Amino acid sequence: MTTLLDLIRHGEPEGGPMFRGSKDDPLSEQGWQQMHAAIASTDHWDAIVSSPMARCQRFAETLAKQQNIPLHIEHELREIGFGEWEGLTAEQVEAGYGDRLNRFWQDPINFLPPGGEPVADFYARVIHSIHRWQEKLSGQKVLVVCHGGVIRMALADVLGIPLEKSFTGFAVPYACRSRIQIDQSEFGLFRSVISHQP
Image (cartoon, rainbow, N blue to C red; front, side):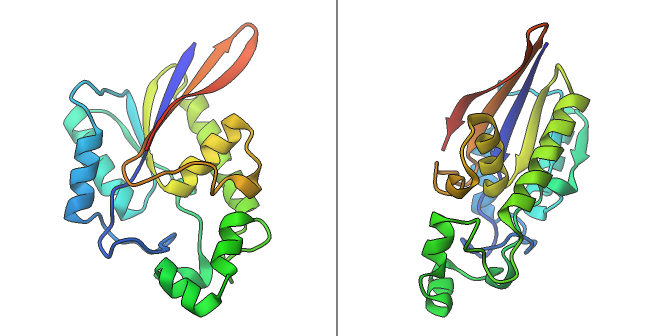
């Protein structure tokens, strides 16, 4: 039995690039265009699972209605919480926190934003959620509308990337798509990254 998970990051939100883990901005007009451009007319899924954040859920609702397929909202697929950095741009974080931003990118385990969600906790909730939905929708083709950090955790899990390197190992721009294939047979469970298209 084969299950396909297509993970797509949301498009650009209103307000442009910033640390917005729990800041609930909707997609900008350009963000909507990015999402529509990332979906081909030949794309069809059996179900959609979405983060509850507006920048994910609104597009997921639109697409589920268009394709007439079930939509599931999953709170554990929220982005990582950035604590005091929420709502700040990278330049503002650098100005206010010195080299702490660079240290975070190099080692997010030991250099969290003040008040931020620990990366190990974030990884645990994301992977728990993805595995649960993979079992629940086993044998189906599923679109997961989520965040850059969520995709990084999912790929780190399949590829065995250490959490220390999970935020710098690969680019996950707006509307980026990744595909994970899960094959279940008498020989066991095999997870593979089939594609990653920044």
